[in-house]
Amino acid sequence: MADAIPEFPFDRPTALEPPPQLAELRERCPVAHVRLPSGDVATLVTRYDDARAVLTDPRFSRDLAREDAARLATTEDGGLFRRRRTGSAAMRAGQDHLRWRRLLSGWFTQRKMAVWRPRIQAMAEDLLDAMLAKGSPGNLSAGLALPLPVRVICALVGAPSEDQDKFAHWSQVMLTLTRFTQDEVDTAYQEFDAYVSDLIDRNRAHPGDDLLSELTQVTDAEDGRLSRDELVSTVRGLLLAGHETTSNMISIMMAMLLAERDRFEDVVDDPDLVPGTVEEVLRLDSTLSVLGGVPRFVTEDAELSRTGVPAGTTVIPHIPAANRDPGKFPYPDRFDPRRANNAQHLTFGAGPHYCLGQPLARVELQVVLGLLAGRLPGLRLRDHPSDLRLRTGGMSGGLQEVWVTW
Image (cartoon, rainbow, N blue to C red; front, top):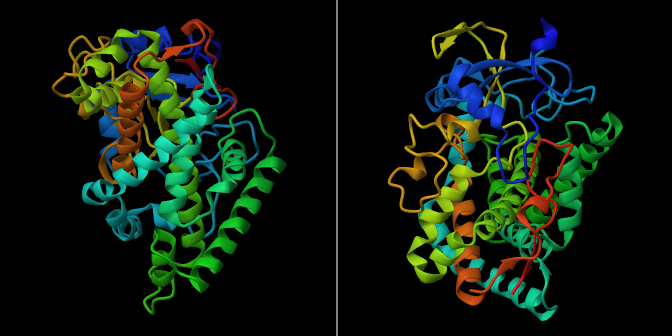
């Protein structure tokens, strides 16, 4: 019987196409067992309503640091979400999580992003100028997609952007599924935490107009709303998530639009399509997360699609599959930047763990797309879309490199 459980993640025809098994499961077996790289078994859900329920129902906990939760990675700790952390575990649940979100939410409002947009625009133009100066073809990933989110999150948090190679290395190791050993993971955590701890001390001594400087003052407040461990964990998470996912998404966005170039040409002809195009890219992407979503641990018996899901199960809400559910999005595989409900995708999650930084990510994607469509209307992929290669061995997917000509 164990042999009948499919290996997950599934293989895909090309880098930009989703695995066909996802549509098959969504149609005939929306709550299915899959075998993870660790060898453990988890439950995969592929319909929109089920995935949203997993994201919003408190019975589906994000606390995977339990003995009976499925191990995701081949490392001894079982991967990022299973790793036991001091100081940060409690922060991710209940009132402590709400407290944490309230402390950070003011930095990621629509109003705050409107203030930051011109600054992000200037950073993007500076990077594009440097890429153009080197001549065509250019590596869009290395020239724009990676350095822009690093510059932005470093400016927001209060960290030196020249350390982007360190962030990239630590992120890849910490997000491993099969690529790195436990010793390498432990070393990455130690180095990243030491870096953040030193950064905190420097910002406390010389505070500026940034998020970290504000948070250090909160840490020093009499009510102790943030412990030192919580602050280190928070800053590490912001630096990791603030550059890793957005940089990957910029490369994915441009590859998706240039692979079927009429999508890009539509934006060139009508810049008002930028926001809707970004939302369709976010909805249709299937490469950003290798697992498809952040796993949950079922704390009480539940039911999804009339299928019982017992307590103790590890459930993975597969967001790309849910975002192509025809029950939610008519003609779901059609790219339509004018789609009325495309912003209802689950790419940024839902419920109490809805991505805090989604306004920033959206602004960065919109700025990049608007800039490239305006200044490089002749932009094309250097390589055939089928030659694009995925990043492998980690929880964070995306493309290895996207080379373009103009």
